[in-house]
Length: 208
Image (cartoon, rainbow, N blue to C red; front, side, top):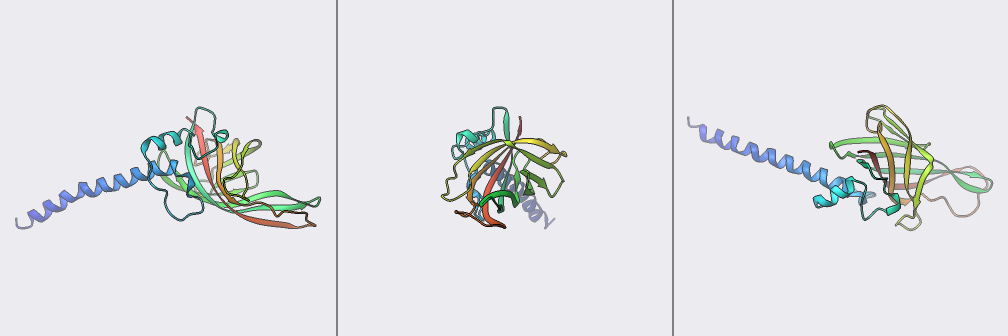
C-alpha cells in the first residue's frame, strides 16, 4: 500500500509523455512539407504554421517559382535533401551534362517515414529501401533560375515511368529546388569528364 502513491504518479506521467511524443511528430509533419529551404544545412527545418503546410502539401509554396508548381490535383508526397555531383563530359569542345550522381535522404509527408534514395542518369530516382524506381521525362522539364548565383537551374520534371509500389511507385512530378553548385566549368574543353558538386531539395508529388 505504501507504493501506491508512487505507482499513481508514474501512471499520471505516461499520458504526458505520450502527448509530448505525439506533439513532436505533429511538428515534424507540419514542418517538413513547408521547410523546403533546408538544403545544405544540418538543422531540422523550423516549425511553420499549419496553413503554410497545407498550402505546400498542394504544391503551392511562395519560395518555389510559380512555373514549377505541379498541375492541380497533385499533392506533396515526399521531401528529400540531395548531395552529389553533376557529371559533365567534354563533347565537341564543350562541357555537356552526362548524368547526376547523388544520394538523397528525407521523409514522406502524409505518413511520416524516413526514406533514402539514389539519383542517377535518366533522370532516375531509386529507393534503396524498397526498390521502387521513378524515371523522369527529359522532354517534360520546366526550368527556373536558381536563387543561388552560379548554380544549376531549378526544375519541375514530369514522371515518365514508375516501378514498384514503394516510395516512388506513384510519383507524378518532381521539383528540384534550392539548388547550390553543380554548374560545369566555363570555357572550352579538350576531353574527359568532370564532376561538379551540388546540393538541392527534391520534392515528389502524387495524384490526389
